[in-house]
Image 1: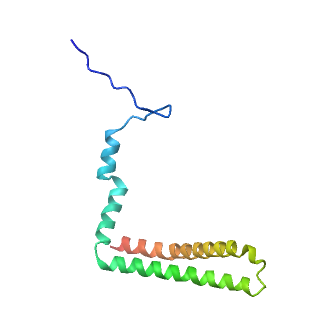
Image 2: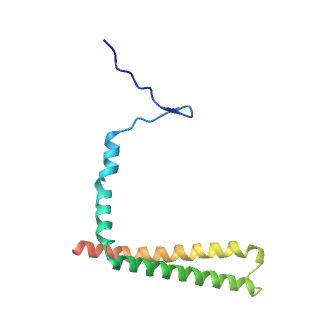
Image 3: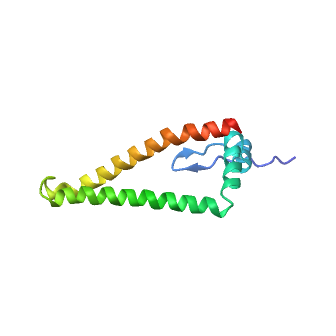
Amino acid sequence: MTEAPVEAPLVTAGLPARPRSRRLSTLVRTGSGIAAIGVKELRGRMRGRRAFVIVTLYLGLLGGFAWMVATLIAQSYTTGFGGSSAFASAAVGQGIFAALLMLETLQVAFLAPSSTAGAISL
């Protein structure tokens, strides 16, 4: 009687490979739990033209805000009162980051409760 060959585990760079789980691949392929709900909602909302227009307008306004902040900070260094011009690019980057962080935080603080209230009322 011949025995079936036993597969040796794949060894890469001296480390044994992790065993593959069929359940994990099934979950990734089909989606489960909150991920499945998220995929369903995004597919339903992003099919129309309106979603793309809103996202494009939002990104345009966000880019305009970042450009405005960069211009204002760069002008403060050209007037001579802002400090050394050697650190101007670092200051502009830090200013843009801080301004966008504050803007996004305010948006989350005001938009999250309103969208949650809308979802609850439906």
